[in-house]
Length: 180
Image 1 (cartoon, rainbow, N blue to C red):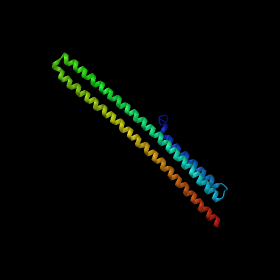
Image 2 (cartoon, rainbow, N blue to C red):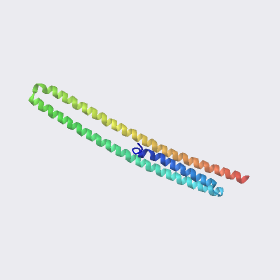
Image 3 (cartoon, helix red, strand yellow):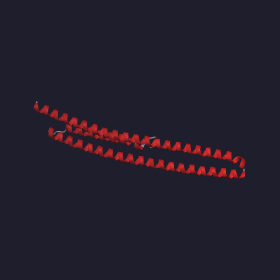
Image 4 (tube, helix red, strand yellow):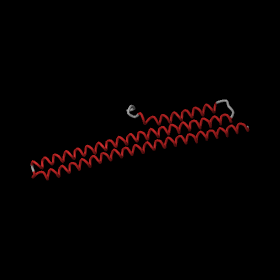
């Protein structure tokens, strides 16, 4: 099952990697023997680096998602074209058979013509339903991908705010210790 779901776990791993790296960097900075100003500068620098990295990864993921959505859309279009061609082929075959029967047995030709037309219509309706179903699934996957990209962007923004808040707390802590 894990072999089939390679794309789904990449985003979670990336978020975990970014959060773990950021947390490790913040802890290292807090315990490093530096002045408050140097620590704040370093925190700001790291915050900017991780924000840029998160934006880059979000853009990469968005582009990959768009490419995948386009690929799925192209495949759905190809399936739809194939279904239309097959429907036309079936319709042509049914009409040819009905014509042959009409020539050999004129009394049953009318009945067979109606049945062939109904069968073609049913096949066409069934195929249109299948095409609509594929398109709905593609739209659903697009919505899921867009939600995932938005969630990644929100997580990056939240992490930046958290790091900025921690940097501000570090400023307050260094001011308090300096005044004591």
